[in-house]
Structures are given as structure tokens and as C-alpha cells.
Image (cartoon, rainbow, N blue to C red; front, side, top):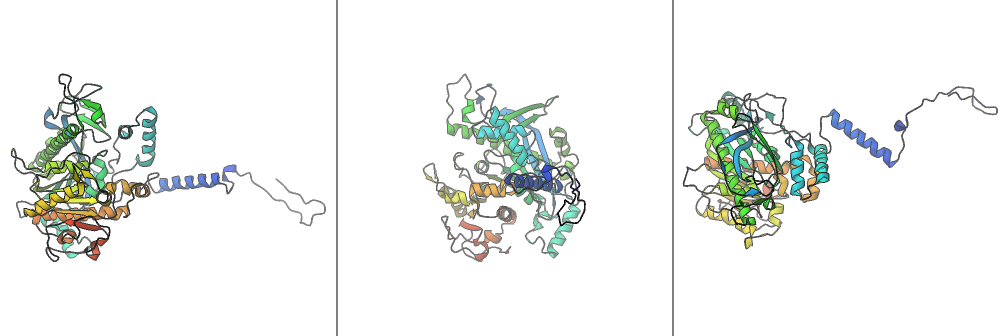
Length: 531
């Protein structure tokens, strides 16, 4: 509007113009305005830089190779009841094994990009969120939908950085990487000895991985993807024993695929068949779950062996997840080092891994070693009948809390497994990863670092914690292949019990590790290559 000089005013005659500015753009230093401005700026930042809301993106892998990923779900060799328990509400079998599902991470060809990634929370999103509401025992219409909305906002768009269904790395590229790794210090911890093509046992080392309670195959993608970027084939199983939040079973064994959406279930959801008077106890239910997990592990091993023996086309044809054709699964033939397969797991999965390592009379030995990360404290007894090397890692939260486990301290039971193996000359380790918490080996601290640090009390940077897990696992896998102790594994135990002082540990490891059991008796044994 025009402003005219009034009589008596000392201003010169002039005209000012004021434009009508929308109220929302007029700066006001109120808390509402500041909050709205901050939220708008954050949304624009996430949009411009392709970042998920209220969480962090999963980082890229750091090894010498690109990483590919394939979801494989195929019918088992023989559909069967692992146990006769049934669901109370429907009467259907609770432990019927129809298919096995796993994500395979593998070294991929250089420079390939699929343009497709797996979501960290698999679709449909509601299946996982409803399952978590059930795990929390607050599942109803309101909480189920609240969980779905919150999960969608927090991690619904989070993608695993591995490229889906891309070609495996060629033998020529491996040879080139072998030469360059010897000349460069960029990947000085990468030892490609297992890829020498002139030996019968050459090929990619294999790791079968089993997840923990209230978890799934996707939640260890960084740990397994990092190992794949260092030359491993990693098969992350999705267990259908009720321990996960939710899973979708796609059975393509018939002319029309059958899709079953299954939520988490527990002891209270099952019963013995109606023609028996048997009551299922808590230990019985854990035994059923572990037996089902063991069956899934063996079926996964069978699929991996089939891939190695030349059945890639059959796996592609029967894979209900419709992945594998672009990766040219037949090209995996003869390229897996199945003789050094390692069975690994976390929490409930570590308990299952130990069970899967027990010697068998009905088949040849299928595992050359095991990795147990925070073996379960409430998932049933730990199998001690093992005759292969084992690496057991406790998080600080697992070691620091004294827990009585079937009448004995859990820490003592775990240490005794390594002690007994070392007494037999089977090299095994038990150690604590300092500053970590139970979820530290999962992806969760990478996606929500502040929240997880606050809720779990982890003192270590999430990225550094996982890096330490990867390096020591890599060193152990190499030990299984050639019998040489490296780096941390070349040190003797410095403390039989968990001790915050961590006295006697070498300076370079003191911040991150405490070793409770080791086959190395004195310093200087083995091969020490400082990181």
C-alpha cells in the first residue's frame, strides 16, 4: 500500500510498497515455527539425498568385491512333519517343513548394478509389524496398525545395499584381485589362498547363518555382506519355527503356488494332537523349535551343495522368489569350497548352530567349524558334543550379566566348550567383544545408532563394533581352511573371567577384545598381522 508523508513529518515525500507475504513464511521465533521449520528441512534433506526418514542408510560394503544377493525358496526334498504339535486355533501342523528360504550373499562381478535391492523389512510390511506386536504381547487392532505405521516411517524404505540377482565374480577377476591384493595394502587383511584354482578344495568358502529370536534372515545383512565382499558365500536362513516376527511361505511344488502368511508363535499357541493327552512343556517346545531349525539348516546345505554340483538351472526353475536367472546360477558349479563350510548363528541361532555341529552317524561331516555369537541363555541346553573348531563371541552385555544356566553360570558353560575342544587339540576360542551389546552384530545399531546406544548401553561405535566382528570371523574362517592363527586369534587367553580392567591384553586389541579361552599358550605363536 502507498504511504504519504503527513503534515509535520520530517520525512521526504516518497512511496513504499509492501507485499502480502503468506503467514507461514513470515519468521516468528516461536517453538511451533522452529519445530515445523526443522521438520520441513529434514524432509527436504532426506528427499534430496535419498535417505530414509528417522534412520540411517545401511553402509556400503568395504571388501575387494561387489556383493550380490539372491532370495532362494525351494521345496524341501521331502515335505514332512518335524513334530506333531498343532496350532490351537486351527488344528494345522505347527512344524510342517515344506520349503526352505534363505538369502544368499556372494561376491559379484565388478561394476554390475541391478537397480534392485532387497528391503530390510521384507514385504508385506504388515506381516513383520503384526509379528512384533505379537512378540510384545500387545497385538490388537490398534497396536498392530500402530506398529505398521511406525515401522513404515522408521525403516519401511531401508534397503540392503547388496545388488539383487547379478552375475557372480568371474575366475579371471578373482585372479586379477589376487595379484593386486599382493601388491596393494588397500585390503591387507584379504588373503585369497582359498581361491587358488590348482587345488581340489578351491572355491568360495561357505557360511550358513541362523538368526536369533524375534529376528529374520535380513537383519544381519551387513555382517554377512561384509564377509561376502571378502570372498565368502553366505546363506542367511529364514526360520519358520515361530521365532521370527513373521514370514511368508511360498510353496511352488504344485501347479499353483500356495502362499501362507505366518506370524510369530510361542508355546501358548500350540498343543499336542487331540488324540493324545500329552502336555507340551517349555523345554519340549524349545526342543521342537531347535529340531525344526536343524532340519532347515540341513535342507539349506543340500541346496548349496546342489548349486555346487551343477543344479543351478533346477534351483532357478523351482525358486518361488523368482530370482537367480540373471546371476546365472549354473556358473556357480564347482566354485564353492563346501569342505570348509562353517555354521554360524546369533543368540537362539547360536544355540541352533551348536546343535547343528554335533557329530552324525547317518551322513559324512558337513561342517568344518562353527561361529557362536551370544549363545542363547533361554533357548534350551547348549550342545557340547562337538568335534570341530568353534569361535564363540560374547557381547559385553552377555558377559557382564551373570546368568544361571541349568544350575551353572552361563559364562562358565560356554567357556568349558572351548576348553574341552582345546584339550582335544581342536583349536577353539571364547572371547568378549568390548563395548558391545546383544544386538551389536545385527544391522539395527547401524540403522538407529542413537536409539540402540541409548536403549542397550553399547559403548562402542556401531560401525567399529561390526567391523571387529567381521575381521575376527574372517580370521577364524581362514584358520578353518589352513590351520593358521592370525591377529587376535594368535594371542593366548588373558582373562578366564570377564574383567573390565582387561589386564594382560596387547595394546592394539585392549580397547576391543578380551580373550577367555584360546588354543595358543604363549605370545608369539601363530601368525600375527596387526590391523
